[in-house]
Image (cartoon, rainbow, N blue to C red; front, side, top):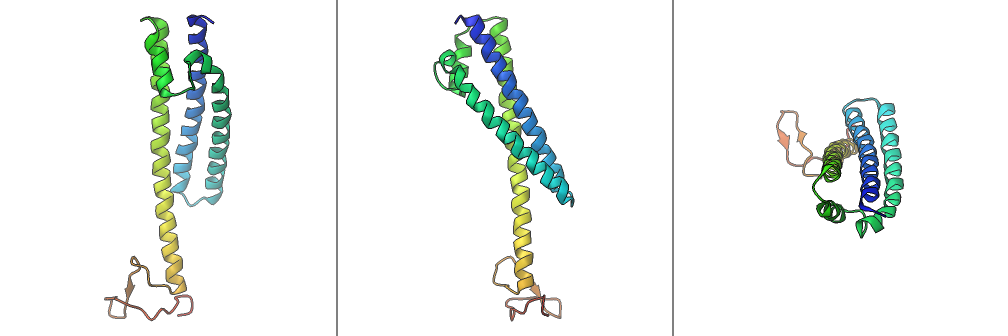
Amino acid sequence: MNTENSSIILAQALEQQTRVMLCMLDALREEHRTLSSADLESFERSVRNKQDQVTILEQTQAQLGALTPILNGKFSKTTIVSYIGKLPAGSQRSQLESLWDTLQKTTRDCSEQNIINNRIMDASSTHLRQAISILRGDLSGPTVNVYGASGRQKANSNGQSLATA
């Protein structure tokens, strides 16, 4: 296979990967919006959408195996950069560099949004566990503050559950 055909195939693969990653980014942004709402149905829908995007991404990853002979290795940053670096200066090289840069930026954006979403979910989970502990009367956690009748914090509580108080 000649370099021109190989470059066209690689360009198509990079464009496809970018489209899939943009869909993933949209799903992650939708998840972020629903995390700040009280609409459980919307949140569940956004999680299903993200799971669907993960499935699609996994399917496209399997298709990238066809690029192994072109890249002289698996689809990776190293093989892509090496392939592009060997191309002569010109429109093919510029196009592939641009497509690769776009894919990398989109992938970074997905990663950052996913980290933000996970932090929000972790914080919500922590608050929920603390609230459940307080309602059960388990005040042994270091982050639980109990106040007495005077309004001052108590160091220790008798462990009476708020549910039975």
